[in-house]
Image (cartoon, rainbow, N blue to C red; front, side, top):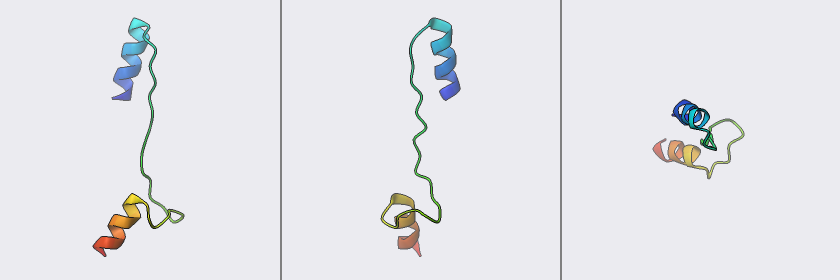
Length: 43
């Protein structure tokens, strides 16, 4: 979808902002964050 926004903005000269928001999971993730909390509750 970000490609569509960029193409539209470039074609029609409209300013745009694309953000890449995500909730990543890894070994240094705090346990109270969303994904570790779900995993710990399932286990």
